[in-house]
Amino acid sequence: MERKDKMLTLRVTDRQRTVYERAAELAGTSVAALVTSAADARADEVLHEHSSMTVPADVFDALLAALDQPAALAPALEKALKEPRFENR
Image (cartoon, rainbow, N blue to C red; front, side, top):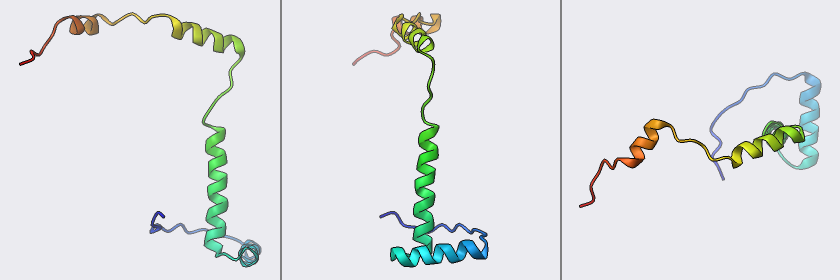
């Protein structure tokens, strides 16, 4: 398990603190564990929501068509590939 050595300080209302403490008690865990597990779950949701995008079919088809076309080599890269710089000994 990863060592937890960083602190995160939060300001909460009296009501929030009471609710968190009661929920943690019912769950048989600490307030810190309850809050971090909820924050972890929400962070995962947000990251997942922003990890992909949806595009119209015609845009996707155009992307695939462009990817299927061979790319032209930049002149400098083509030259470098044709002229060996090192000799095998």
